Length: 239
Image 1 (cartoon, helix red, strand yellow):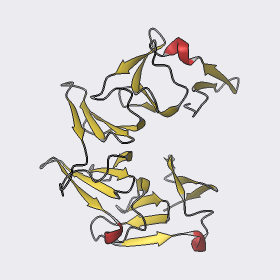
Image 2 (cartoon, helix red, strand yellow):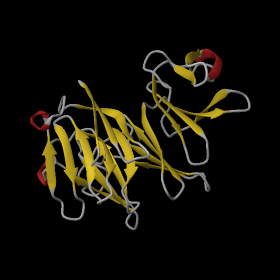
Image 3 (cartoon, rainbow, N blue to C red):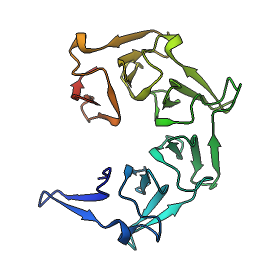
Image 4 (cartoon, rainbow, N blue to C red):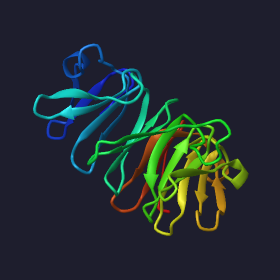
């Protein structure tokens, strides 16, 4: 469990107690951080740890140490990590763009917002990466709306307030069984249909405790129930 200020904690499901790991004992020298933004286990069982101040790390289960995963820029602020259906690792950063890492070839690719580039990613601040039911990659951003990645052209198309999304601050999303993407923003919950581009927005008038959702506070359980965290509690519902 990653905490913001309390480092990494391990929860023992048998004793139901927490154990805090000393940052200095598990991080490489000079790279320790208690500001943990994400802890992610990929499809291969590898554990990734992203920090706000010292970058990205992988956990070595043999040594019980974190090993630095070097990006193009040192000490990058990591928001989240995602392992897609094609085996690639996507790394969302705060201000440093979006990384794609091929685990087989070891190739590291950086996507950045560029001036006067209509098919580049629309923001340097990336909240999250996820796939829809058709295995298309979508990226949520700060001020840049929702971006879809197109594999054939290696480019992005942004969907923003101009397309009916309530805010360009899109924190995350989950796909439902009908193909809709449920977007969390700072101005409500939006049901977005990528096929028709229709958008329906829900807010406090529909029973939400708040229209301001939190990044990273998103989960779908085994029964298909959605959970979204807001600044005033969390929402759970069956879409």
